[in-house]
Image (cartoon, rainbow over all chains, first blue to last red; front, side, top):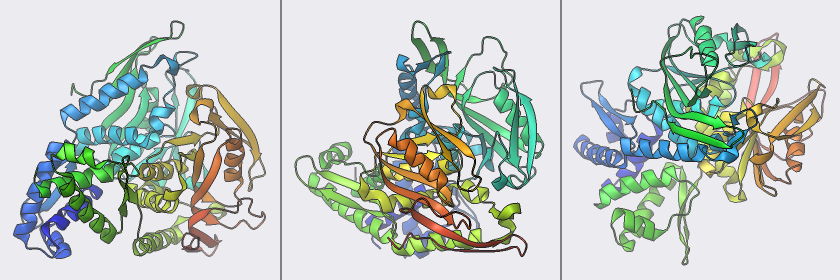
Length: 271
Length: 271
């Protein structure tokens, strides 16, 4: 295979296998090229990935070494993605009765979802995450987008037990806004004890739901290493019960009667 | 930019923008190369995409022309993916009381989900699909995977109306297996009239749920162009109410007491 062809094939392979250690002999063998040529190819790919702002190739030396594609969104690109989200969400047509916000179209766009996944994956790539946890329904696409870039499985907490989950562990918790007692269940076989997890959700107000997930995960002895929410909003009545999290946008001042809404950057760039 | 670098950047761009018409002048400008060089680059990329079994570049000639990456999984690769799914699902440890099957781990693996999405996208790439429709919960990741490759939005039908959906259209339908009356709702702003849609779900027995979605979509004057299900199973008591669909695997003979299960290829290669 010629260098030009190899570069296409290797780019494709690396993008399709993020966070996976690939040995140089593997590439050598598959593409029938000397290790020195493969090294040169990887240097080119690394340079372009960095220039494109989509990540970089980490080299791990030694006998068990190789190369790993680490997704990482450049600051310029992150700012652009988040600014665009703010603009989209500020559309007053999104305001629903009660000051809620219609976001299903934004969450329905696979490109937007993929970009959001890329941002969280960039942030959490160093944390040795074993699984992404989310709660049905709206968090699911975001959780998969993050999982794809971190190359780890997704675990879905449900509000209602289903027969297809097998035996489950369940907890009751009090939702922040409605003060109602709610239930959450997680399939017993879904998570190994001591796993490092990252919680992903679309929206957080006081954080009752995320706190519920945290309590449920304690039953599995999981370590919550990171929490990512697309949008955070202030709850006037309730103090926040979750303090360490990363948000992409913050929704301020939803005025149902004046049809005004302000959406600003979340704390993504602050920590 | 040198050819070697351009090939990496263009491969990356094309993979990230499936089903999108990209003009040659666009590439020329972004990468500072003559149109003739870009054409040669595209020929190389096209050849490698085909060899890798991940799709091809379609050339559209004329003033409004350009190139489009069409995801298409080769038959060898499709067979491999489906065979592996069958093997995974045949594990007797998956059998749950009542003859149900535990599949959450399979659906939780983002690579598996992505491959399933690739397969359906290959099959439906020519149908001018405008939106992917699924029903909460388990169909969601599959729907997004298909949507990503077809570059169209996802619309999620819910079992329960939520305030964040705004005004909704709802229907009642009778579920095949339980004979219970169930409800399905879809946000009014989610779908334009006359849209071409593709329904994606994880599992189909008699097809009551998918039939329910079809009825609901009639309220939006949508054209159901395709139906894709990961797994189909026979229902002993009920005749199937959906006849045109594509399935990847078929679950046969789940024997709860003997802990035996047979999983074979679905009708994917038949139509």
